[in-house]
Length: 619
Picture 1 (cartoon, rainbow, N blue to C red):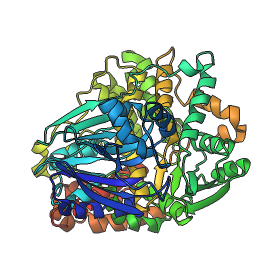
Picture 2 (picture 1 turned 135 degrees about the horizontal axis):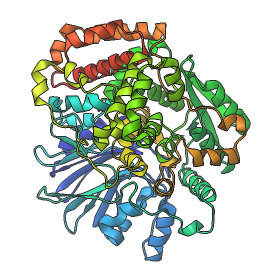
Picture 3 (picture 1 turned 180 degrees about the horizontal axis):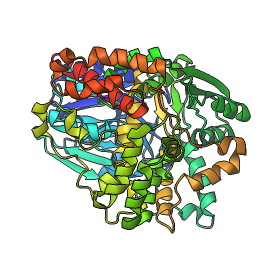
Picture 4 (picture 1 turned 180 degrees about the vertical axis):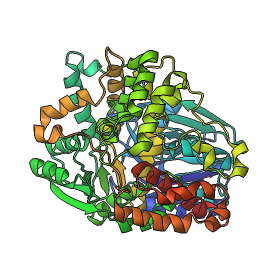
């Protein structure tokens, strides 16, 4: 795990401040060097071969140099293949294979890697730079073409060069629609992400070429190894293999554990594989607190368990956590990921493993089930269902949504509107309509009047798959939800505490298998096949618990009081005037909110305003 950076130019001193702003991502070592027309830098968090794994790695002929942030899980397999072709290696470090891999496979090497990575390779023969990012976007990489070409693992690092200093108000409505902005946009002018599952080449003249090398839902199931097995046996094989590959480390390990089947299965495989891990969980002291269930899982598996807790006063940490996130994610739950990482690092662990992925692969979210329901109801049934839901007691709707807090009248109206408008909605609206927090009219109401005419269309508004089916819904998640909502919260908060976070179930073989299954016959939401796998390995008491959302109980009096105190401080008209993005009159009624969804709106606007104040040119 590292931080990496680079520029088109030959003055290393200009990049030193960029590299130094990545020190938290790699406190153990750092380097800065010229390579042809480029300058590259890195900071290292030593996980494998601490003594000999310094970067850059250089090819035997000195022509190719590589730096990498992340882990190449299948490095042993690739190393054996490269050794059979005459290459020799001298360390136990996964990234040492990269120069030789480039010489053998060129740009196609990214498609051969299994892992989480953002990497840079310079080839002296062509004086060109190759950048690549893992399939799901677990590791970040930003670039800017202002004054040449510059890239780094974090926005704050590039700001050391005076770049990416200006937020982009034309994307505000797009951000509000989901409370994050899908890549490659970043909410900074002139700053772009290298999208997940892409590689890029940069010439000495600054010309770039961008290429996608993998796309969810477009690949056959990787069943050649297991052709005679049942789907459940295949799933077991791929899940266990994914965890086994992600275990390579020479430092203490931890596993994040909740009360759900995803983390329980992860812990089972870790135990089965003989890994020495400490399990960690986080609680809130609320109805959704799963620390007791996590403890039960750890006890069953014989694993040490170390819980930690957030309390209402933890909300005071929002300014610090928003700043370390780089890009705004409008959910106060970012505090939970920060606390998990802080606690895990304090236990002496350098690597944490978590259970992200199965909810996306196997449809574990309520909005996925609602999409299926809306399609099944058809154009005649949807208006009838919308009318019925509009008159439902909110308690019945809460039961369907499996949410510990009441969704209130706002949630009821939102669900009815989703069904009523489904037939005339774009595919993107159908796919995201129930996990948007702000209605269409809110997207202008909360904007400062001066910005309303400037808004650009949402980056994914025109996205249209070949077929509007369940498989397309699942595949779309890998374009935005996973990298820009889920994984960014883990990476930025873990690396702020010099902790490497791994998500084994994001193995592309598991994704390809799951999405191929989704395209066969009748869709099976609610993680049906995944739950069958859990039942194979774990007792019923651990696998039959209803799915609980991971959320902050903002509707509880003590949490609400602390949220309102912070909101009145940062969303006061005088503070809003400093940034000029939000409408004070529209926000004022939210200070009287008592139900969950309006309080989440308030928290999202608070986070956006804190981010604007943190990253504005004047800050």
